[in-house]
Image: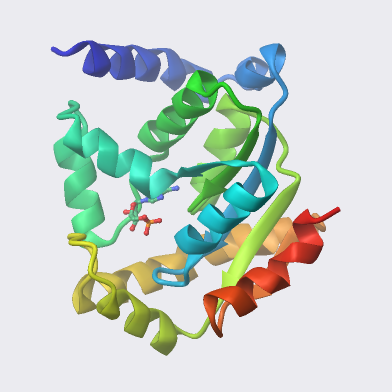
Amino acid sequence: MSRRVRSLSKLISVAKPCLLNQADAGIVSQTRSPTINFVLGGPGVGKGTQCARIAETYGFTHLSVGDLLRKDISSNSVYGDMILETITKGKIVSSEVTVILLKSAIESSQTDRFLIDGFPRSEENRVAYEQLIGIEPEVVLFFDCNEEEMMKRVLHRNQGRVDDNIDTTKERLRVFEAYSLPVIRYYSQKGKLHKINATGTEDEIFKRLRPIFAT
Ligand code: AMP
């Protein structure tokens, strides 16, 4: 077993009991208190592109949970096959794996300001995050766009992704509605949500973000 797989397995064996134990909340925050912002939106909405611009302009580290999962597949981790199968079907990867990868990425970063792209994607994700990481997000961005446009953008991009096809994208859209919209409603009720109109050019969309970050 590689060192990377051993360390992920060890983290999971440590994390599972923690998920059941509220008293262990906030492991990261006991030593550091990074600023966390979440970024949500359906497939093809342009989260990644805008996150890269926000990160560069306003000094954040951009962590895409989809990228962390794809990296884990390429590193031949013990969870690689399960992650690949889940992504290929357009479903959501288990929170135990996802939150542990995210926690590990935050802890190994030298920086303290994060844009977490594609997270939390479900209420299960959100609860696991609160139990294992426990840092309240400052801002939650929701990029909003109609499904027809999202489907068009996914099918027009050419990144060689296993999930950028009609059938998987239909499922990703269904999963987004069923699992991510409740999270969006949760943060809206908490007054943290910034809904961004994600139609228009990259520049037009970025302009709409400036008032949130240029303070
Ligand atoms: P993305 O790169 O954000 O389009 O995500 C691609 C795929 O990775 C999703 O369709 C899910 O299968 C998986 N994924 C990304 N983020 C998460 C997450 N927060 N929780 C579980 N699965 C995720």
